[in-house]
Amino acid sequence: MTHSKDTMPAPATTASQPELAAKTPHHVPLVELTRDGLVESIHYGSLIALTADNSTALEAGEPDAPMYPRSSLKPLQAVALLKAGLDIPQNLLALTAASHSGAQMHRSGAEEILKLHGLNESNLGNSTDLPYGVAEREEWLRAGNGPTQIAQNCSGKHASMTAVCVINGWPVEGYLHPEHPLQVLVRETITELTGEEAAAVSTDGCGTPLFAHSLHGMARAYGRIAAADENTNEGKVAHAMRRFPEMVAGEGRDVTALMRAVPGLLAKDGFEGLQLVGLPDGTGVAVKISDGGDRARMPVTVEVLRRLGVDGGSLDTLQSPPVLGGGLPVGEIRAAHIFSN
Image 1 (cartoon, rainbow, N blue to C red):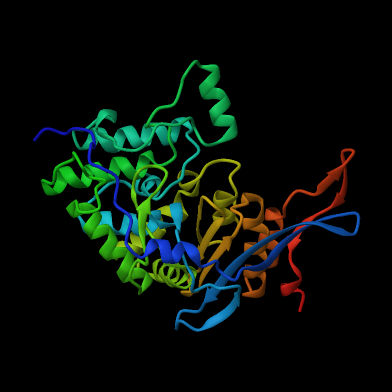
Image 2: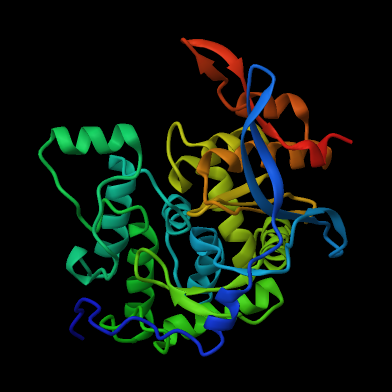
């Protein structure tokens, strides 16, 4: 078989998308930035926390509105890849579910997945980019490097997607097309885990088909994955991410810090203000910041976890840095008043 790079057209949008785009979700204030006693900025959004029996423990805004989960879909996509026969070491499985910083261990890991299956970087269909992590990007640029597919934060997922094509005898060329058997399986797996059909289909920044789901459905999926038996496909993904949190994001990244701070917790972020969390008891948490502001994800997520009874001491290390004035603390980024009672 010839393993060639994806040249298929991007997925077509669904007929229902213009109607979906016209409806603005009813987001509410979730995070505030204060400066000397005044609220200077407000981040709106929606969230939900579901227990293992699908009861709502906490919600705000409109958690049933369709939205694009972006990279928070990666653990669900990784479950699909295991269903399709992917069999790699745990650190590489964690990388498959990663939005990595582009450190040497991440780049080498993606290259190892490819090499194990007779592939190389030319077989990848993801976009090119510089490393996502600030320190990693600066080091990369100092070495005279430019954007590559391996350095791009989704390269682990794409390497494993091409590997699954080899394992099953599917064409590597066109592996990102929504009608490719790999992407059909991914969509079916996401539907199964979320308990809902995709409301729309688009293309993620890296070129992968992107399925719209609700925060409700995503919280359900993360609860299921986090509570799954280690011998199941869901449990294998969760165990790998927990064991190698540095592969899921990277040093200095809040998702890695959160998994290290709370034993058994599963966490994955996504572009445009997404944060997903799963707890070992089957509780799932999904947060969406409406303006896509990355600084607002963690303050509200930490507050939700506190209200769910997660050990407060372990979360203290995840406090947002203070708002400064003249180099001195004059305010904070905090969960909004809806959590004050």
